[in-house]
Image (cartoon, rainbow, N blue to C red; front, side, top):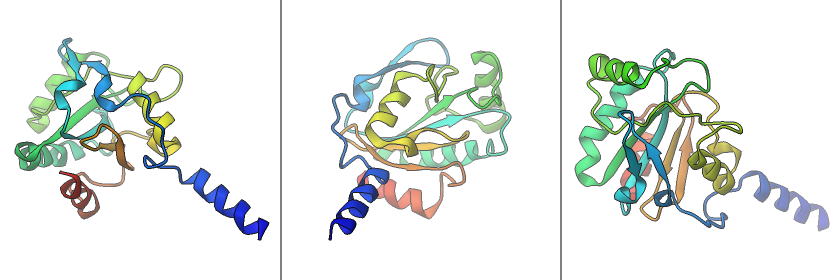
Length: 180
């Protein structure tokens, strides 16, 4: 019987999720700099669902920008915020915010909020990504560009999705619709 208890405990440890997290802070307690240099106080997204995605201009997944824009267009009136977080953590982003902004607007007609170029992993990661790891575990840490973190209306992590999950996939859309 002790063997099953040990295995059960290990499974719970490795599959930690937001329901088990003891949140001291919530998503809405943070601020992040926008691509144009203003501070985005995430409190303005309180009671909304947020899909936070680390992005990059030179990645094989960069075409997901189109799907992110389509998702934004379809669901923003229902309370979804798509928040793009350009990052050079995987050495695939431009060097300057204005270059990223222009790239996104010219190539993908992006008009959802974008942050400044931000570290998303390691010691230099923005505090919001450290918060995500602390409260959801290592699955919240981006392993590559276009990693998606879905935040519910309570400001907690609802789920995470890898780079391979398209923004308009049934799996992601169903989860968004469920918590909207």
